[in-house]
Image 1 (cartoon, rainbow, N blue to C red):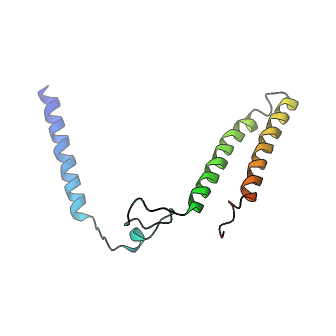
Image 2: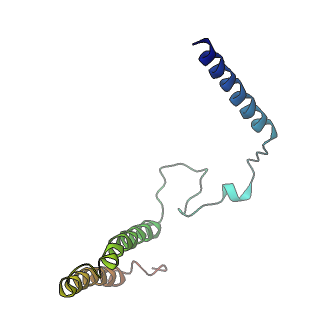
Image 3: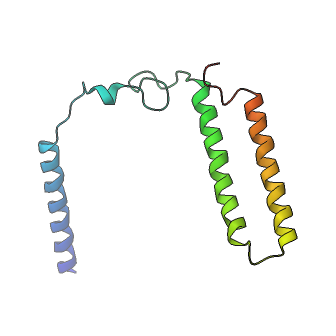
Amino acid sequence: MIMLMSLSIITIIISNIIMIISMILSKKSFKDREKCSPFECGFDPKSFARNPFSLHFFLITVIFLIFDVEIALIFPLICTFKMVNLIYWSKTSLFFIIILLVGLYHEWNQNMLNWTN
């Protein structure tokens, strides 16, 4: 028991020493231009957190998630191509691709893909 306590105390001391050394040696600059510039979300990171941001960023995120899920659902279709009946497989994949194309047409029709609205 004493051995376990001494090892835990040594571990805590070593980790604290490493953290203190990293704080001393790290270079922190609050006036760094990249850190103060907007990053992928369209608003200033140092401003009020409840400011509204551009709807285009949200729509691009939703479209990305839809196509990301699409990839995750198409991959098993490709893997099961040789294992199932060809007619059943082609009906399933055609139905899935038609749903995706209708969704893409709807996004295009609603100008979600047009960045300069």
